[in-house]
Length: 368
Ligand code: 8Y4
Image 1 (tube, rainbow, N blue to C red):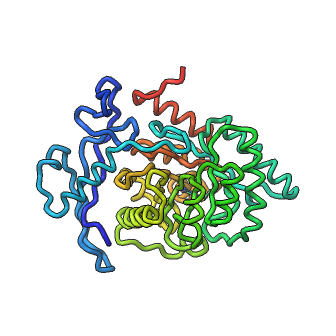
Image 2 (cartoon, rainbow, N blue to C red):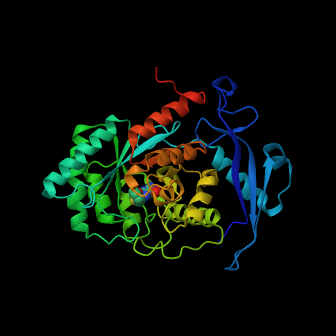
Image 3 (cartoon, rainbow, N blue to C red):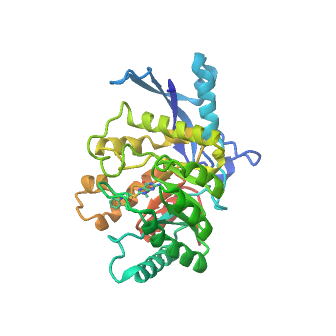
């Protein structure tokens, strides 16, 4: 199953409150985008011939909304109107959090390469302290991960992963009222993390790594972030290949959403993420960034994780990951400007300040 037509919302702008219709948030001159403050005025119509395996042909042209609706797109008309509806529709709250303005997910790694030495207890205490700091800096969600999924990293046994993350989830849950997401690919970690108070599941394998993950995630009743990755963390950067990276990633996420819906996980509980850096070259990452709004056609909120990743180092010439703050903030803003509802970041204070300015400067929330 592959689509022949895709639509990417373009001509984005931020209408002032007054130009929105109170009834169903209709915007004059455009359509509201995915429950955000943005609206789109046109779409890029992307057509591709059925993939033959090598270099399938893709054509793109920008079409105003008027022409899109007047024109007969033949067999693609139904598919196109489904995509417009998916892009236009509002999004469900995420664990009670409204996604009508960009939200920050702060990263809390509980791996030996982050808060090391001093033993298990000290590691948990350090991670909890870090999470509390990120919450104070303005994180809406804290993403707790005990399995390093950075390129070329090794697998972690389930007992070790549980020992790392559970005390941190329990500790943060007792101290804060932020949302907590569990970054894991394992069914058992999903179940135990949910019991410990996690609100969201974040799976870089889109519930495909562990054969029990889809059932486990469904049973928790929690929302799930489905991220695209090509290959396993160990080998994914070896020679990533796509026919068209954005369209291939879209197809994958669309298939995962449909399969999980059939398995009993409703779409309203799903989020999607193109997986920057996971089996992607620099050119692939930039294509995904530039074409990000395409993914609103999935009909679910979008998560973008670009923070401190290697492609930022490559473009800015900053070798040390921790020093990639400014590049990371730029990437997060670029994502938010295309309607990404959630950005996953290390540098919460810097990102919060940037988003405060972006919101206030585009007719949105003014904090004072
Ligand atoms: C420096 C610092 C270099 C961090 C690389 C990294 C994502 C994710 C990761 C993402 C979602 C990472 C768990 C990779 N990335 N989850 N997780 N989206 N949803 N690498 O992009 O941060 S781990």
